[in-house]
Length: 338
Image (cartoon, rainbow, N blue to C red; front, side, top):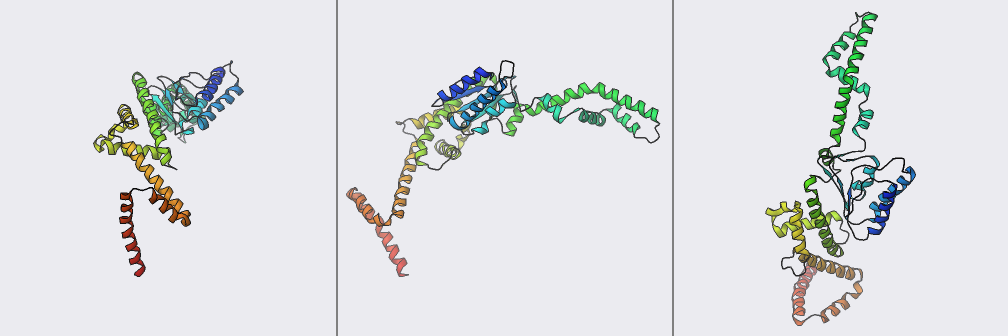
């Protein structure tokens, strides 16, 4: 597992090189305390070029688990978010955030500058502040002379200028609430919220579970053609519930318990191996489907195939075939006569 901090020119170059070297078979862990570096020592064109290479590798090349973690008091912003956004490779990428972290495209200050400018703050003051409300009511009076109106406008401007820093700070806090881990989880951009003191243990068991799960899925894929990652996960979940019972279905969310179960399923000498039994059933069904398809597509070789198959059967198996064929012949004759 690897962790990187700021993506400066040299660190980004090393990252791209490592990706091309490591993509063969190792998982990848990214800790994101800040965004891409943009100081004097960075070349904007090179940063963009290398950043795009990282994005391309994550999207097309990397087929191992990728886990992104935003640690305490860290912020993931702007272009850095785009590079590590899990939707670019949802099969392998997951993002987690500490309960004290923040994440979003814009910082709260930037959001306020765009979404909650001074004119919007002044409207809020005139709606909430008692003094501003009274002054605005007086300004609407048709009996005001120009001097009184100018004086009221001057008082309103002074009041708004006094309140502006406080309202601006409240607006920043309000914008910051949209970048909290709870909000990120609600919007579905992160998988879960973690605590720093237990994050190492969580990632240890979660990574181990994902790697064991990949081993089982590789065994299942040859006999489950055209089945996606989501369907394989659903199949594993169903097998776990069938093996452990619905009472213990909640343990599917427990990585440590799942590691124990997956380890049992991978062991070849295990007596209680629900996944291997299911794989054998799938293999049998897959072979039968291939035989049916070949005979349907080549009916002229059906008889020769049957003869060839019966030659490789034991006497008891041939007797069993005969007993199974006779009821089928009787049914065909009845249908023909009717």
